[in-house]
Image (cartoon, rainbow over all chains, first blue to last red; front, side, top):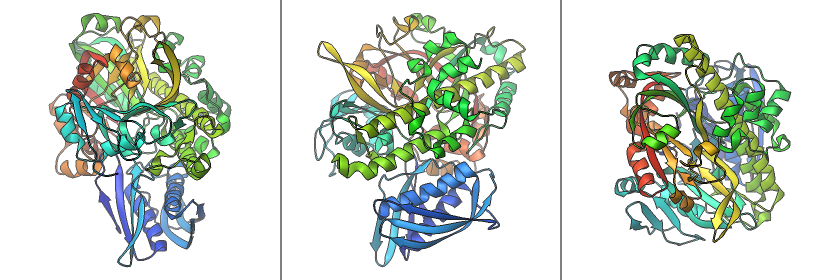
Length: 133
Length: 480
């Protein structure tokens, strides 16, 4: 998976690296889905996801919160994610999957702002995200 | 923030002098051993960051079970002036009113020993546990959900799920009266409805313990505790309902920070001035989530009592299964603190800390007014837990004490260290029967992942915040 788990005493932190922002947002979702065990085998349903934060960092947190809500509250399990637009503080994309309500591996309560950073280093975008688990 | 300066001021306390953006100093309750653990993560920086918030009164405090959280440290306590201070949803956390209760019994270990596995299995069957657990039998209508949010534990009494006499054994009688469903989003409602009466996962648990040592006989008697007695600890909170309330308000306050004129060292500390309507909206929504959590623990208690009845064939009343106390760990409340020769109201945040009222405090019910408030301090699932009583020294901590052992190891690291081991078998060898919805929970929650709670309570006791009344050890555990 395109993410790395970083030690955080109370919670869970990950680092995601991607060659552009769209991929970074997509891989962050794939990381959440992998950690929660929220996969679907078939793209039976499609959901539009749009977030408008106060800046890019906030947009990433809002983006992941949307996914966590769909998984936790609506029982949605993901087949794939596609980000169509990242601009300023907005992100728009679609997630495919199904309302399976299957058992999850790990609870993620929320993506947090703590220690959050999106940096461009050597042509790659890197984000560190801490979750409350 | 540059490397922090930290000074030891006595065997139980470290001071973080004012530096950088701090508006006050930090005070960390830690003995020499706990201090060593402190430098392994950024928990102290988080204590300092909290000290940067507007209107903070007294020091930014951390209890000896301190460890790194997000925004506030876990174990953090801070008070803010009603006129110039703030309320921070991150200073309460996502699991609003995650808390603990201790249910007494009059059963002795000799009677329980041969039956404990059956009781644990019965509890595991009747209480929904695990990640995103939903209640399959409890159906709560929208109207009832409104009543849960506004009435808290009073709703349990009206539904016949809890005797009225028990309400005095809840912090604030199990109801924060400022709860207002008006500020609660549909998303929060949708997440909350199916999760009422569920344990969840992570560090939430139901534990059967035996009292193995009485330290303060008189207070133990007042608390109806005796040696070899079986008690039940229940630790859970407001589930997805609280997570959503917290998320909704962190987001809203973050957006509004420029309007409030507040700058922060960490966005997770997003807050609103207590004089602003946004703060009142949050406090009333948070109170709704807190009331949900009181009810959640109450429903689980009802199910636990029935599990005991099924296995032992006696009524829960005849087994003396009454509540000793139920207290909040993650909360922000307007409370009174002494200021010179009078009392002032402040907004106290406890993020992984327990209220600990001293003897004589008028907020205590008469039965605890001589002893101080029962403070329940769970350890890890393999070692001891403690019952303490709030003492006079808690005035220095805005009437707060520790809430547990505090993690030493991340969940990720714990899982790695547990590879190839059966934590369940290891616990079983120590006479502890553990059931979990997922095997990995037992690995994440293994005893070595936590500090030894004895160090934590000794620091609290040494500092005069609360005194040790009794020690318990686990014999059966249900984990999510």
